[in-house]
Image (cartoon, rainbow, N blue to C red; front, top):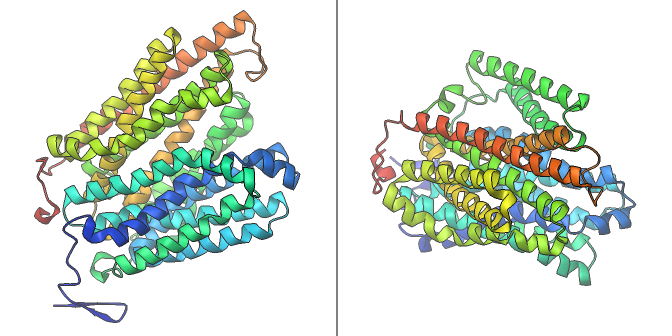
Length: 495
């Protein structure tokens, strides 16, 4: 029997899933534009921070909030909007978010104070929370075959990674001929492209793939506060060290609100996030693998940047070239995701790539003092693992959930990555603050400080390795409890 979408009759033919990526090129172009915005945004804006500071007479703290406000709002609201999208329509929420993105971007033309720019960045963070997880959820729902799902998500993420890689260079070129506001105004045409692609290429949500449970407002508040505090605390630890009372206060509060969130979700008949779903093997293992990859990527990038510039004295331009192994593997590695999945199957591909991430961290922790070649190897290994696990683990999370919960599944994977990023930076900042005396940015160092820093990066690298290995081991144990088949040729039609 045919269903209706927004009052229109939906026939069986119109519900037919695309059989190739080419059949869905309009939709994929729109979804790729969404992910491009998320990956390009901060990378392109960071280049302009000195110019913004001079133009708006912004303090150092205000400049930090220009980037932090976006990240905190984005990370804090993803779960809420994921839950809303599963109730009221993924396509609908996506388009509303893109309209907000376009309007916020255009508002940049009238910004004249740091506070106004921070408000614009908060609005963009809200838009990103409404759109970014939805891009993965809609790509997943667009296809019924798991192989096509992996290829589609790989394509979308590759576009975003290319944007992240070229962002700083593109931003520098734009600043040479135009005011900094142009960097944010560019989001408006990206949003317009995305709206066109999604409206033309993706049908309105099938009501049978949504649910109508009441929104758990208290759970939404507790979950948002927990995530926001979990993102803010690592920043304070990294900036002020392990002795920061403010960082510890935020951490304790985050733990308390997390406990209250769990209690609330277990007690209410209509939770924002059904904790029983997280306990499903495919879901929990995918989230643990994603967390390990996020921890490794943020932690290793931070450590390598400090080591190249502060310990080895590389100028910023040369240090950016030193990070090229990571960038090149992230971009080129997309070509190997589908062959690996075909050979190993989705579940095995997930844990193989997660183990590769841990191996990269271990290489850095043990061998970083022997020269750049080992830093390059570690960057390449972590990037290779991340490139696969970023696609496969997210796909597994959504495969393991009911059809009416795919948006919150995508939001969960992004939230796990964001929080793990912050934890990675916090671990490094805490270790270095404990082992290094004096200001780490005040170079040249004494010989004793050089030894302290070398000890610090080694200890921090090994600490990240241990934490990531524990997450991957736990994820492997959880994946082993999955009752789903692991054949490479598995199709969602068998579900």
